[in-house]
Length: 118
Image (cartoon, rainbow, N blue to C red; front, side, top):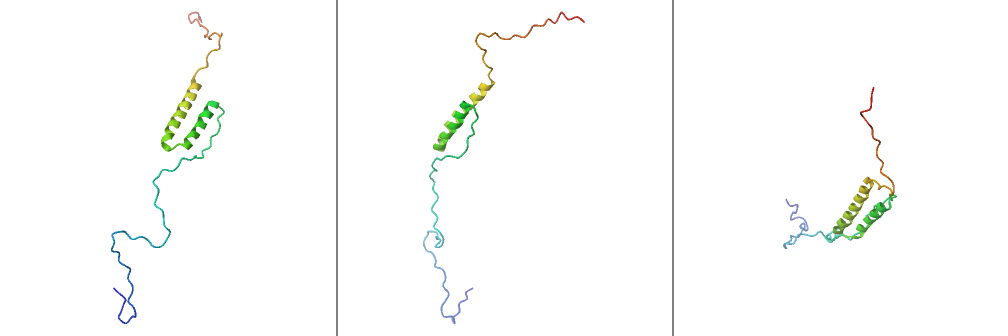
């Protein structure tokens, strides 16, 4: 319902009607740039690496820093390399030390179970 009457001096102004097929754009407020679909540039993650005291493990952990400068699709190669190296380092902990040169293997004493009389 309109509030205009002929006695009023000027009729109320209605908003303009858009005749184009383009959507209305806001006239007020900040202009927002369209989102970029370009991948972000590689950058360090800032994850600290605490030395372990084992040089071979510390070197592998430092190798992880190589991934900081690669795009995401290059991380896999670095992670697999480090994983392989850490797995080898852990496996080497389970290996028995080799016998020293010139030493004899220790054999347990033989027990004669048939000589026991009570």
